[in-house]
Image (cartoon, rainbow over all chains, first blue to last red; front, side, top):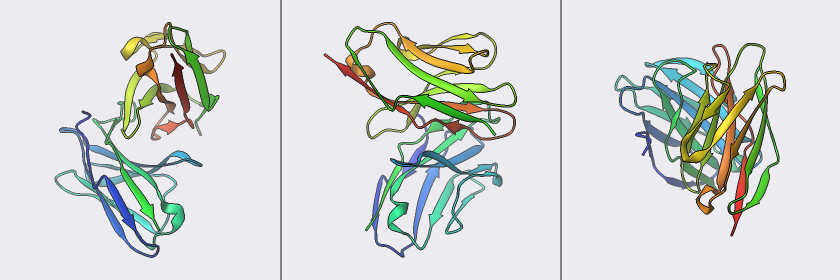
Length: 113
Length: 112
């Protein structure tokens, strides 16, 4: 058990809809990362927050947004969903620096129909 | 920018045989390198990490990896494969102030 909790485990929704994915980091970790995993693109870094502030941005679409709350949990909001957004979305947390290992949740599998 | 190339999207070995998963990296500054494993329906777990303290790094479950700067490689090995090693393996690199970048992964199959 990594200590990182992601909800929900599965999400099925229709095109054009909006969903929110939630992540609780491992106790004591200040950094939260979001990754998207798909068969064709592999693991793509989306965005990172550190102690409530955005720290780094990767290949995140404008339709996607995220935030980290004072209690350090994070939410990833996906809007105007398209079929191509179907993927496994992982949250990971780490203690401090980029050199610290990431601890991954079990992911949220999003299916857009 | 740093990047990782994993040679072979699928590797198949017999139980008891040597496991060799290849990873080459590109980085303009000294890198930190990682191997992660992903079992079906689970998140990624850290196998081992290179931080420049030693070129040969030992990880969990009998895996180890050797950092070779001259070859920009960080190949993962295990002397004897077990059925439970069947999974997807990811090599990853971080250098400077940038988040972890993953390779595309290698699926390891172990044949009885």
